[in-house]
Amino acid sequence: MGYLRFKTGSSEGEARTGTLKLRHGTIRTPEFMPVATRAIVKALSSDDMAELGAQLMICNTYHLMLKPGAEVIERAGGLNIFMNWKKPLATDSGGFQAFSLGFGLEHATGKISLYFPGEHKGSRKPQKSIAKIDNNGVHFRSVYDNSKHFLTPEGSIKIQEQLGADMILVLDECTSPLSDKEYTSKSLDRTHLWAEKCLRAHDTDQALAGIIQGGHWQDLREKSAQFISSLPFDSIAIGGSLGRSKKEMHDILEWIHPYLPEDKPRHLLGIGVVEDIFEAVERGIDLFDCVTPTRMARTGYFYVRPPLGNKANKFKIKMVFERFKFDSKPLDPECNCKVCGNYSRAYISHLYNMNEIVGHYLLSYHNTHFFLNLMREIREAIDDSKFSRLKKRWGI
Image 1: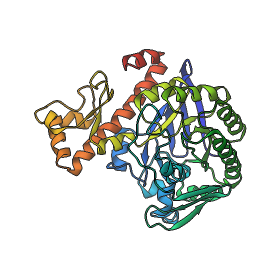
Image 2: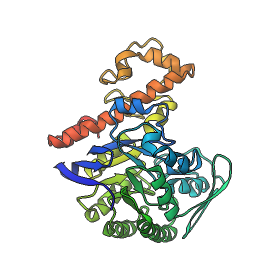
Image 3: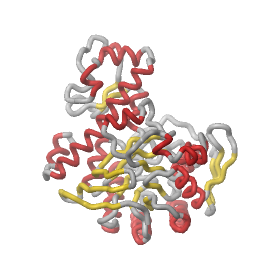
Image 4: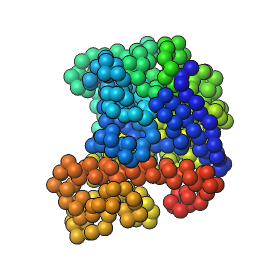
């Protein structure tokens, strides 16, 4: 299959470290992948990401196929050259966007219902779907110009081959937390059909990841884990609705764990909450991706180590000018990033309050450093057989 070599290292229970070798370099896991949606992490350059020590980033196939177009990137020499990134890259398949434009709009929900039904109440209102899914693929309209498109499993693989990332994902259907079991079961059969089509269409040395679906039903998740693990994928991803509560997400990871190959990396798609990362690592997950660091920066939140947070937001604080206008401390006194080493809360809160672009940049840089540094600490703790102690120190 693709060019990927994965070797496990230290372990503490199911938590494990590993070495993931791809075409553009070697990655130590567990690791968090910053999301470079349109071939850029919001507010941060490729040089910033290299300075931050990012090992791997993931780009968005849906957006890049629409703008600037896969052919543009292919002619530029692929994503690495196009965005001046010399380390490994992954691309998603477009499957999550199919969900977000379909049931995501109809159900006014995210993949974990903003985020778990019954635990959080979302403020979104149902809207008309602009995507339709059948066994052949996804019919959708562009969010940019309303033009019509049709994405098939084979088409998704072709586009990702043009983009040229080191690791690519099969096209799948990401179900809503509010979908019933009958629909989820039919969707699972479709995802498995598409997985086989993607395997047949795959014709490069890019590593290919299969995706486990099945919603929050144990029999469906186990069925999917067995099926995807039986196919010759290079890595395994876990996607779709991850339950109606955090406990259900933990249950899902425990249900599928016995079926996952030890010698393949495991990627939990779209998860970027501190507590969830610890819990997933404890259940054998190697890779994470999420827009959380920069999205929270744009809404004025900065991440802090315990015990600086509060009960409502344990690891993040809202940047409120009136609260911080005389505060000369860095965002997080325990942080060693260049933002905390050079700028005060008072200054950054002033920039954010005035909607200055640099304010968004400084918050984005710090938040991204927070997550990458957290993963470094987790890897070191597992290597030293101190992961449980680290988890306790973080109050989880």
